[in-house]
Image (cartoon, rainbow, N blue to C red):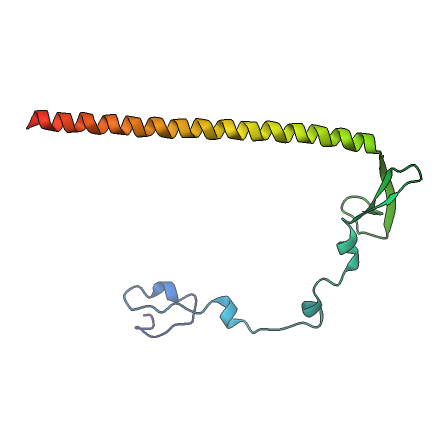
Length: 148
């Protein structure tokens, strides 16, 4: 029979109140009490291992190159992370860095040119749309004058 217009906090009966004015029940957040479960909530992530997994470090080599070292987990996919090992990935020499800089600079210049060409094409299209609109308006006005 429903609640006959009263406030109903029973989530199962609310959709059945079709004929009567309905007040929506409070959200789940309002019903559930606010509880802090210890110090973890205030500090945040207490696991230092998970914070250090993606960090990288580098140091100068005797020859002037850079040794890039990355922290990696000791175990592979799906298993728990043990201790972190410091592995030397690669040596970067200034010559390779300069060539990478040149290639990235060329790619950037090409992208800027492509963007400028696209902008110019868009402006031309907009101009054509305006011209077509003007012609259509004059044709419509001429047609209306001829019809009267």
